[in-house]
Amino acid sequence: MKCRLSIASFFILIMTLICLSDAIAEDSIPFSERAGLKYVTVQVNNIPLEFVFDTGANHVVINTDTLQRLGIAEFDNTRKIQSNTAGGLVDGYILTMNSIQAGATIKYNYDVTYIPTSPANLLGATFFSNFNCYIDEDKGVIRLIPKGGTNLNNMPQPSPPPDSLERQRTGSERIEVEMDGKKYIYGKGWEEDKEPQQQ
Image (tube, rainbow, N blue to C red):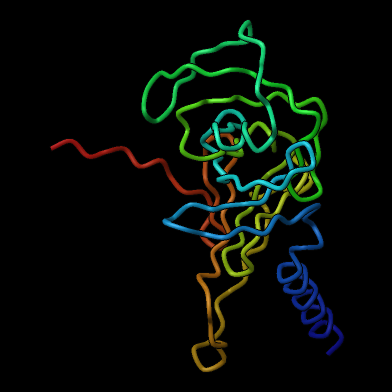
């Protein structure tokens, strides 16, 4: 009987830790979703602005509307760059912001890329370089876990409940993380790179 109690206690502890993933996350950033894109509020020089959460972008990118909202009328042309975007090679400028904050993560004297032709502001992966980012679809948050804080390869996976006990679900219950160009889907493991099939 004592052995069963220990196994049951251990199972309850594991399930509690899984359900309370907030406990291992250092920060959670709420997002809204439109047309398959996740939008987050970012404070740039203490001004709240909407950014697309884009782990495929190498940098934090601001557009012309944001530049005007920030009151930036002049900038250093010596910091002109060419940037590869989904639309091809475009001209841009490196600008240093006094501060940029997403959730509790704040960086000072942070370089962003101003791309005049960008339709949206992009919160790129370099801003979260010290974190693993989990997308919790059900709770509508992006969880930030310090790198080295959790080994995803050894995370326990809960077994599915029997059909008769399964609770009503309202969301996708999908949690994703991207690290080093690979995607981890909680409950499924690492997503394999899919090579296009040749015909």
